[in-house]
Length: 382
Image (cartoon, rainbow, N blue to C red; front, side, top):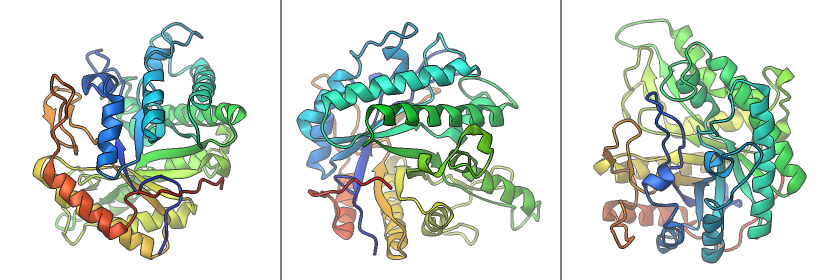
């Protein structure tokens, strides 16, 4: 049975921090939309009340570098200080789909600017906080390449350029890691992407080879980062530190888009997916995003937690499970209330309601895993 060592609690809370521009040109800022940017300290304290001492949170590049090369830290310093005041360990997302308007994501200057920005963030984090810093350089390279580079769902609103965008984001991640390590050699990095399963429909025999090709594409960004694919990008095993896997109930589908429902014959157990990632890379894993909506939240948390436990009993190094988002948020495209979190929208006094069913299930899974609050934790380079 694997025992986690990296984070202060086995269960983490993730704050939605997307900052991309939609197809209509509007920029989202989910930290502001959920008021987490102004309520960071009470939000972190609320996590602690539920045995969660580690969080995923965001650094908003578009606010910090509004002019080329000039950094304003007003949006970040209060959050850093809230984390320090509450002794909350944070994994900081540096680029969660958004970038400053003065940059062209397709140009070499994007990579160079991101590296300078990452180094500047690392200096501030080093000076403002104690302990080993954790970063997610570029969130969901593979998903972003598909959504922004092939399907034009959000920025950079391209079609047919997904592989090109994936290369650019890999370059940016590598450059940021090098820049951060030059500032703080202790830094750890989580490379986050969805894990999926794709099959040709059993009742409509189809091109299983194409389904398998799509399934294997989930590994492309990680393979590029560690130098297995396209080594000219500069990949090396040193850039694949901690693997972050994102997993939701719609991450398995039949070729053509119909979701494979959990519990059906074609549904692949999540524990098997985690074990495949471990066998392929031999890197520690964080379930970096998982969750469900409405009444499905509790049962989904139970399923994912039990599957993680099965994987750990096989020796897979699962370091934690991040409930994401931990706070309800307004939908990206229509601003509807998405009831996904342990906590709801804040009222005028800044108080957030607690969804008791989620809290109850979380306590049960903490009891099962016995890692609700890891008081003594170890962070070692690997």
